[in-house]
Length: 451
Image (cartoon, rainbow, N blue to C red; front, side, top):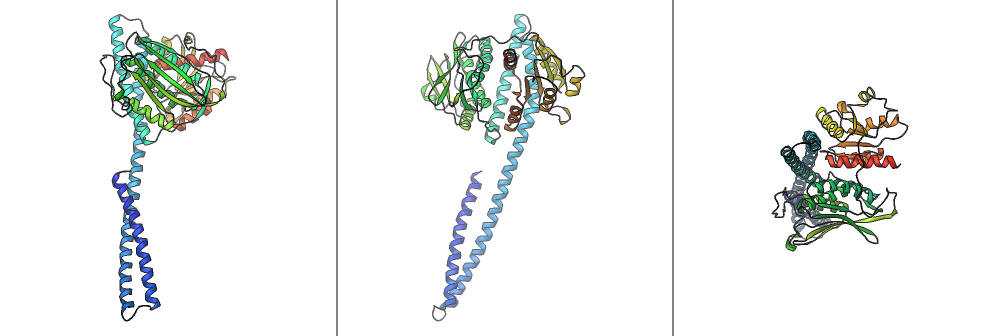
């Protein structure tokens, strides 16, 4: 609410109090007139005064009513603006991220191809440019969603090892590409949080750590266990942060100076988003740093009751990603460009891919109930208002054994997150990062192999 609206609300309260005072005075004077307690012409004078006061009450009441109407109109206007903002964000998420999603997938496929050094450098430059566009656009959308209250946490108990194992696979690849050593250590303790939002916080910390750590440096992801909480820590051997800057790095548009050519400074909103999400989750964050030696970013979250079932735990998550060679993927995607890009990427990983636009077109190509398949991928919004979750459900209903399924979308709403979770599917947001897709597919197929 604007300052003007707040001033109007304050004025309404003052008028209501004065209105009550005038009514009391009016009632008292009329009572004196009726009782005849005054002498000579005093009753008539008192009555005139009471009448004047009554007129003031009517005027103030009219003013109060007008201000209340203006306040209601302003509130409706603000709510309409928020609604329009939400619709705009939804349109941006789909219409802008869709072509960016295809570009990311095509470049991901190109990075897998054997090419000469000059061409490889060009492809890498395009990839970095797309990374920057993705990061800037995603940051602006995220900060708008958080400010509009669109993002709501879905708190539950889950095994921390599951999330950290996936992050380890993702960032081992990213760090290796930048010449940075990466290691991760986990715990199979249960924590209570929103796994998706927590993952976004940790990915921001990890991305910054890799970006600011020089080649040959080191980034470590680990946990520190307490009686009723767990600290997730990201250590790096980067340039560090001056003590007088530590209090401002989580403020919007604050960017640290850097001497590295490979660090894109962005808008200075990444850590501001982290701070907003941490406050939303009620998870304290902190940072320690030494100039010239590196930094440690930490987030503290509550422990759950005991342990929950996890995959085999190890003191280090230095495990190789599951090979995708020979895996069969069914892809439901109505956008031809995105489907071609996804197919090219998956085929480059050695996968056998069947693409379809809906259940009927899939059924024309394979026996949906019995054909071999390792993972189902589906876009959320398909043609003719068909939803990807419904198509995936159709497939599951004719299978003897459930197939690991992933819904791909630009929608970050809590409603969709809950829906996908209830179906037992996984969620992947656009634009799809090839390394994240590969890590997720590896984890799903590995889980099936060990089941």
